[in-house]
Image (cartoon, rainbow, N blue to C red; front, side, top):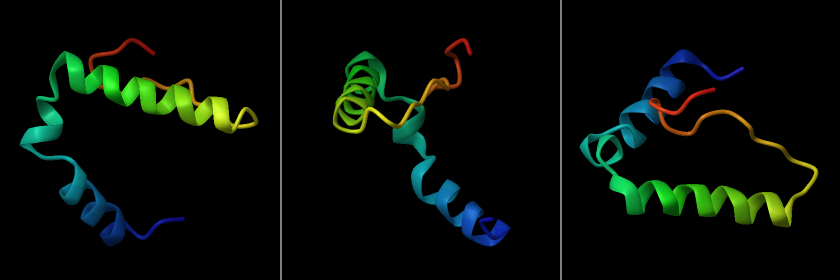
Length: 56
């Protein structure tokens, strides 16, 4: 398991003003990245919402 301090460092690094307001193009880019990854690695599956406002 990840240490709480390491987890907090990751959150502070990646959750910022930019990640809160990526816009439609940014969201589309993230979804495309996940789709390409899943095509390259079909054994992996990721069905969780990527953005907070997305339904589960």
